[in-house]
Length: 115
Image 1 (tube, helix red, strand yellow):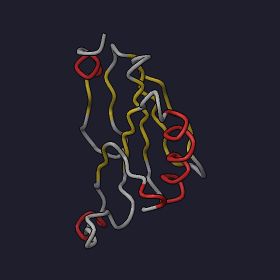
Image 2 (cartoon, rainbow, N blue to C red):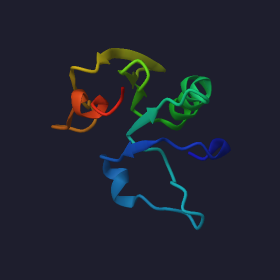
Image 3 (cartoon, helix red, strand yellow):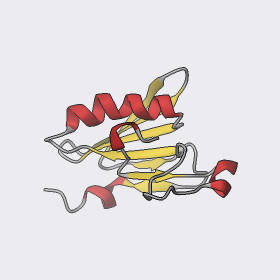
Image 4 (cartoon, helix red, strand yellow):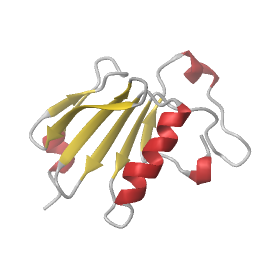
């Protein structure tokens, strides 16, 4: 998943491929993770929302989260012949990852230090 050296802010591997997960000699990931979390940056939000999403979709990332620190929201997308927006979570909610059984994230904790 090395198109233009784009990588996620965070990712997770949970399938059998994770057992064979390797890095190449330049410490880049070989293959796509099951889940990606992208944190929007004001200066690169268009790139993160359009370009990277296309790269992750093409690579086969199953679940894709976009964290918007400015609006204190998390948008969750899953693959279904392209990405489909599943839900938008507010800063006072809890997210359960689809591909990580039992994994929940308390958004009040995530956004607590953001004014």
